[in-house]
Image (tube, rainbow, N blue to C red; front, side, top):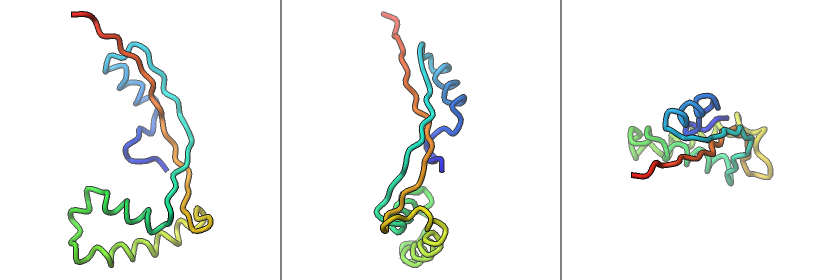
Length: 103
């Protein structure tokens, strides 16, 4: 899984650093894990933390979340250990340096 706020291609992140004027930079791909107390917590946070949550009427939230939790529990069962949800997440870490010219 690649989180939506991360760049999936290190080349794109390198290009942005270069365009932003960083003099030295390095992009390091990493493999980590994302962990939640449960599938239910994951679903709840993903739904209510999404910009799309504003389009979900409050009266329908509980039933929609329950339906998604049920399907997600089936789809994510291989990542559930002792009730906790843990799955791999790839990321690109940018370390950069920018020297400002004196005025």
